[in-house]
Length: 393
View (cartoon, rainbow, N blue to C red):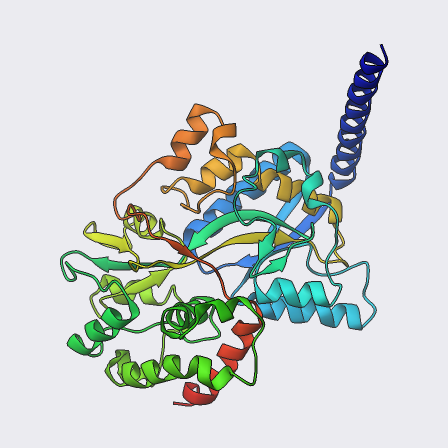
């Protein structure tokens, strides 16, 4: 009898907890209605911009929340703005309500106590998230319920089968390829995200002990650990595009150069981008995606709410919608954006599963091992050293 009562009490407690959560969420949705959410997110991708236009229409129609996409080129600049506002005492009326962020920028906001907390795993659509993915870690930093996973990504390379039938499959082969095709290989200029990611990829392959990259930078061993990277770039730059004296400002700037054959290789952090670019007519049908045989860096990207956001409820409603199976399936569709989902596909409908697993011409179809991101402290250190060595060339 006592066991039955205990079981009944447990069920009642679970029901009450669920009911309270539902009531709390209803309150959040009610407060969100009429709010405007200023979502600071990268604006350099046409497919991303179109997807967010669709999301804005849906959040307005369904929840009465106005979503404004503030197109940015560098999340670090937004981080500085948030911190400046807080330093000036602007604690409740910030200009940023939601930010697409990860890595060193998340860590900077977290260390500055500049993030609104304890909301992510209370979202109704958290139930669909695949927690086997690194959704609670961001560049070796615990997310601590401060940012919601939005998508997964992996460094991927692109080429045209008509011009590059056999692509380079390692850092060493990349260098050999560049020497065989002088002036037709490059990478975006750090601190552009994709350029810095390429540096991290090279360092992961070239450093004697890649495990040290999972720890904070050790200044005493910095020169020893990074020397292979700088030696590599010193050899690569003279045969690179424009002799390594100038670099594309962004990854997006590489796409037209790849399309017209000025560049033979380009890179992306979306394994489906080539398919999307073929679909939109920006790359030829013969384009394809590939990776390095031993793996490329991959991670999860996130959404965060600044502590001084004006529309915190609206931001949560937007983040929850963007985590919904419908929104995640649409985002994963290679004809829309092709950004891989953070959801557990087994929890979705057959139709949603089909959208997330569909393949299109040009997408990465081979299984490339995912390498972990280095600790966030390596980003700033690598960018500063790169700029000191090559930024003024």
